[in-house]
Length: 193
Figure: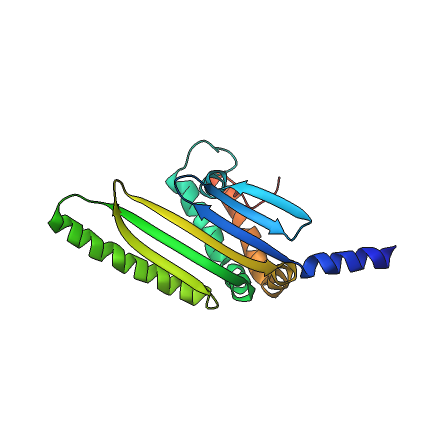
């Protein structure tokens, strides 16, 4: 019985998880697929709200909550970096639409946002060097908007391995969360209740 459970856990941990992040005019969601066993969908708006707010005040995004959660993500950067190195990214599509105003301003804004896309491309190459398909577009549209689709596969085993490898970072994150609770009276979203 125990051997069967261990074999099942090993099989589950070696199965790849496919994560598809989509943001456009119609879809705003994160789809997580664990082969054919589970099919979980997370709303992108709720996920962003989760990252930018605290447990005490889910309705309001404040500078304090953004700073607090940014510090937690900064402490977790080695974990995120290791997971991204072990992942198998399939495709990335990023389209930025900027509003047309007058030709002089359009030229300056086009150059600015083109450089911004080049910076984004450099970040993606640094954090996810195995990215197979990358498409970046800069277009003029009726309003300022962006569309984003990114799909990647990662195995649960690699996530667990990254957590074990960066165990010191996990301790630092928990210390920071406790300090934040004592100093500011808030807790991060990453801490379970």
